[in-house]
Image 1: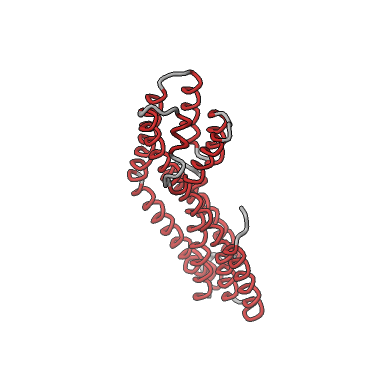
Image 2 (image 1 turned 90 degrees about the vertical axis):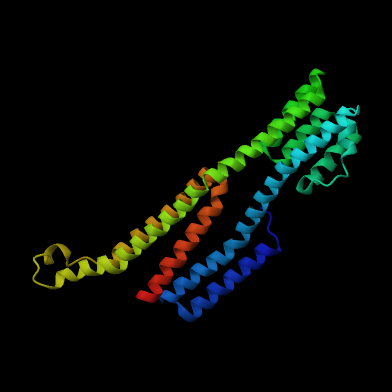
Length: 275
């Protein structure tokens, strides 16, 4: 990922927060809370860039459907597919416009349709567009009815988008449940750390008969494993939510970031308030 102004601002802000909190509050629970905030501030611009990139990629696939339909109309009017693509170079296809314009420019320079389409699919980095391009290239090479093939490609892309939307709507409740279950898990861990473990450690002070087995229990020794468990759970829970909701582990990174950041804020905030 290329570092942009937004990324540098986040990094600088994070460094300032770390230095300031170290000078003023080092060693206190407030220091760790501010350290978490600084980490989130530093990572947030990169996450925003990732979300914008995924949104742009989604727009390309949606606009490719409009491009394929316009291409069908041009081919059916009698124009060759190469000429039809060049006729569409100035139309607005949102995030796909620059790729369509480059595709048309390559064709006008004499690059073969197959090579130009392969470059088009490679640069868009979309599996949906890549599959469609393969079909178009094979149809053009075989000399079949290109308008029929293009119409089939458009219908296929449309069905893919519809299935994606239907799946996302169908699993929306599961995503909500995943977040709720995780937050319940955090609450249970906090109750265990701040309520149950201190009570168990206090059992060693009386004539309960448990002094030998419990007198060495230190709640803070159990806090670190619980904290690590929460972080691991939050990271992988986010990936699972992304896989379920959008069919991609990569798209679960945003959910992992939300859950990990929430875990860090809640745990360090609770320790700052209750210790």
